[in-house]
Image (cartoon, rainbow, N blue to C red; front, side):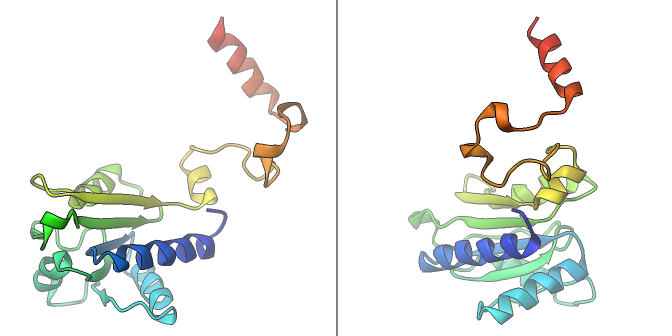
Length: 174
């Protein structure tokens, strides 16, 4: 996504789709502040949810309820570790939907949170939501800002390419 606003807007669209089929949803942010930003955005768009941050005392109860049909919980990636999320009504393939918003400095924490989507044979879905600047910071995207917005329609010869990457590409294929 180009910006955080685009990312959050798309996430709300997806939440509405999953809500229509009554999936339980768990949204993870990298920090309490980011979880509160996501929560505020959802509230402004009329999406009912529960916010769980590190200062809350009811962590186990909130995380355990995250598997209830139609529930939405916004939290940080590290909250509720060690607490099982039991999915209700799995016979309808309504597994837990996990959204992970933003990048993390620790990939182990990312994988642990993503793993909540499908435990013990239950169905589940995982969406990692990143902005282009975050992907660029992580090294996944290079020269994104110099590429035309609709580069999929632009001929390859019209896109400016870094000479160093051309050199690497030639040596790879030899």
